[in-house]
Length: 128
Image 1 (cartoon, rainbow, N blue to C red):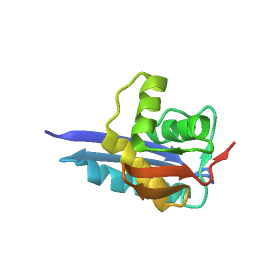
Image 2 (cartoon, one colour; image 1 turned 45 degrees about the vertical axis):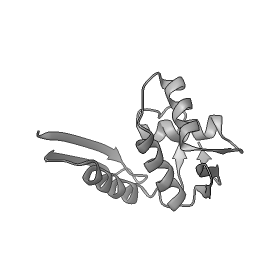
Image 3 (cartoon, rainbow, N blue to C red; image 1 turned 180 degrees about the vertical axis):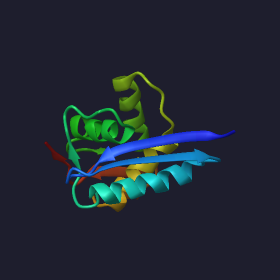
């Protein structure tokens, strides 16, 4: 099955980008492109979340981390439950885990292995 993904975004310096991908796409391929988007936008240094910008899954997750887990620890299952309650949409646990893992790798979350699985805690997120 042929799939099509179109990504449009602006960087912090006013540059506008449009990327279209078509063909036999996998989740991994799309996530690699999103990593490129993150690099171009400079999110490796600091994540800025506008209170108006909840149109992407990434921003929705950041919004929930800010709103529901400002200081305490949480699991990917906790975040999935909050996401589904907040947005009335199902989301795969693997999707939540991928985003949390990336935020952990970038230094925005601390991740600790426990008997029940991974437990996360916010380190820093900047809200504008």
